[in-house]
Length: 219
Image (tube, rainbow, N blue to C red; front, side):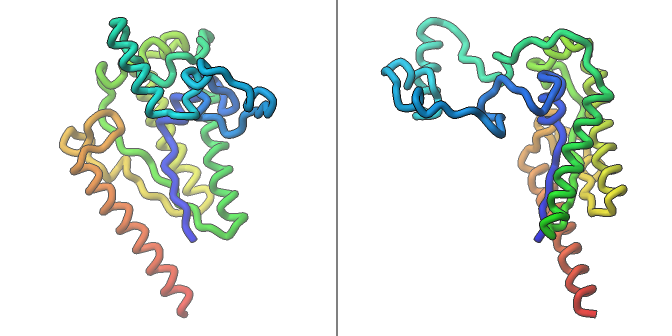
């Protein structure tokens, strides 16, 4: 069995905004949350509107209609309610936490006899438009867009280093995907052509790995 992970932009934004993997204001990103069985079964009608767990699409539509009626923008920035962190970002701690998360993935796979494969993340230049949701949060952490670019590049380097140190396979999309609008619709997301190119690169790498493993086992 093989497990492939591309582990970069979401982790970096989370670590910059909240300082830790263990804290978040976004309930959908929690790995573990507390459960109060007493309050769970005791709700009035308003709680169904407030809690998007029950009917997420319906509640989202209702909120968008309400926002349009009252001329308020329905904000789709998942970090809008993040508690402000105003101290200067500790980039060394960000790098250390990011490395630890990768090592956990690698060694968990190895412990269960699964072959881990790491991938760097494709990207193109971060523009002002791409970063419109980032800028204010970055400023509170003493960072600008150039700083974020440097942190992001360092994260891809960390992925390469962890793969090399653990002697595991790496699919280097950062190097293999051209950093142009032909393949990228924004800083890290593919357009259709980019998706097809990435699919070919990843499938070729996996087929090569699988076929090589079979040949070695046959000897």
